[in-house]
Amino acid sequence: MPVTWNLTRNSQLYQQQNTAQFNTMPVRMAKQTIKKIQYWSRWKGKYGTIKWQANTGPLLMGIIQEHSPITQQAFTPRNISEDPLKTVVSNYERSNQGRPKRHLFESLIVHFLPSWEDFETKQIAFAQDDINKQIAVAYDNFTRWQVLQQSPAIYVCGASDATGPYRQVVFGEATDTAAPKDTGFFAAMAALVGTAGYLDFKQMCAIRSFARNVIDMPPWEGMKANPGENEIVKGKFILTGESSLYEAMSFDTHVLNTRPLAMDLLNSEFSGYISQNIAFLAERYPLRMLSDGTFPAPEVELQLPALTYGSQFRYETIPNPDNTSAPFGWAFFEGNQGYETIDVGPPPKDFAGKSISLGKFQSLDWNGSVRITDDILINRNGTIDTNKYGEYVQLISDVTLGIMPNTNRYVLPVLYRRNITPSLDPNVV
Image (cartoon, rainbow, N blue to C red):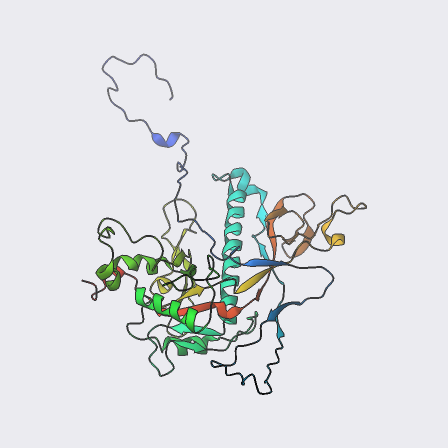
């Protein structure tokens, strides 16, 4: 009975309440926040842009005028009393080609019910941020992969054959079905990297020398037209790669032996330009390679054990161990504008605008923005139905992009053996 009257004073001094008679919440949820390293782009906006013109076909051809070559190192005209010889000068044009590309991004079809009854209230917004990140990374990966594939030469640190570190290689546009530099090529190049083929300070300076004296690569910026006395052609180059390359400068033997006394590497990391004119750009997801010439995914999903209550689908996105322990890496030493990106521009007007006759018209929008749509077909137990009640939505994004060489030899991909913990290098004392 819920209430008992007229008990004696000393009755039921202690009686425990039956907790089963009350309704309880099965679990209390609390929103947790997490801080991860944000993504930053190193390839989008790096190169100049050529705007696409509609109604001109699917192929873009760029034309570059080339000066005639210098074909001799000695010049001996005839005496003025003799009939002079003459030099006839003519120049050529060269062309580059590029094709616009297109790719679609979509979320899963989302029902309204989770947003109505689940604890988390911002699932759509988070999914939009997630797709935006995937698009940004995909753009960088596309540009970097095309630069690697279309580069006519590479530098192999500590190459163990007679050709040496700088070598001419196959090159061309990579498509979704084939690439000039395939897995076999990458595996063969990896086998040439010496046991000490690290991209250290001396190697960076050696690459700069090849860039200046063999490739005739102009600096990225700051080039002077007329070097003064006791100076070479000035200007800054760019080295793009994983952050451990720059971290290693604090423990590099040559840097430690020759650094200015004012450079305190005990209490602070190396900072500034490398050898005065090599600017370093750290990538968020650098290009790492296995010995067999494959490129492991940067991140994987780790399935966590199920808890007493809640969804069994518990995953954490973590760095892929195959990627973080990969023995080889690719960096990119760059001079001035080796490539140009293609700005495809808007879709055709008839497809991008709103129809007057239709109250709702799905316009073509390929600018890469993530938008929401309810134009979805629903599978209801094997029967296809329209989304006429608006119970489902989906996030979509249409991306166009493109790249073409300008002077592709002005970018030199560098293959090196990775040193994951440079501070523990036994060669540095």
